[in-house]
Image (cartoon, rainbow, N blue to C red):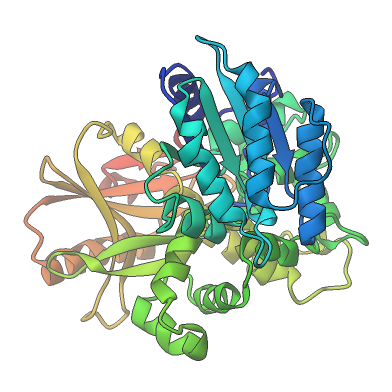
Length: 474
């Protein structure tokens, strides 16, 4: 598994499941291109008692043919099964001789949602296979995954039918952190420093497939131009494929993302429901839950006098989706768009906003840098309802030791310099927050920046500092 970067927590989980001594049914889900199949293939070294992969957009006959190929690979000699019940019965007969005490019989079905074509009865037959045979044998480890996350959640993880409460473990495979991204990029012999890796992360996030498209000898700007803006750019059409693969009916999700992309701070559920109109149709909570589970959206708390957990904001967080909608969607004809606009105000603003999102994706690293990773915390945002300039703080960390870290997040290519006006702004933010929320905890001004603060007459007001290097820690 030398090529399997990061994933330490997932590897530990799989070790536990393999050695549990009981039948296991593991459902793996996550965003397209996040590396679900790669993780399972590398962990088990493709040594399966049975494996099959569904055909993307395939018809019923094609799905049965794909499954039958898996059967033939383990010795099946008969004709094509007439039904999924027959197919799984044949599978159980073929696997019976492979049940060896003390050894795992691993069954891997990839792109599981593809097999469920209309009126084929796949889910019922699959549930029957687990309930009547697989779950009776402690040697069996059934692993399923698929990019159609909504289907996986509705039909497997939160099933109300034959598979209700049948999975033993669910695994949500998330994008790489900055640390894992750095490891992968350096293993590809790409000699970027951390600022360059951060900039690339801002555009594509920690998605292993997107990172695998990088090439040695390119700068970040050249890589972004080639991936997004060049003729036949590899990621130009990825957006449509992404949502078509994740959701069988992507239109409601795209409408929600359109609403979220219009407000970087996030919007309430009520605002989303009003904007999407007919697409809401009573299923908005399910749509939002699925978007969160796919790592496109986060839900975070707000605060007035108290932390509001039921009146929070939904915010678009997927780096690729934000980058695409900001720069690629309108299809510029400039094949060197990124290189030609590096010093433009538009990109400078984007870097600042993107860095805020990177920080929000690395809260555990921020807590560790502050030395509070073992202290109970809540994090949230705050927006003034009273100050004339509408003061807003994107990140506050409220701690069980009665301290609140008020975090200012600043991106720069070098050390950040606090000016007199900036110092006044930070002090006003703190004063407005304390006044309006009646905060009784000590408030600690905290700066999160790329290279730290440059010492001057105004830097002394910042009591805690976090730099880009802290975000790269595991």
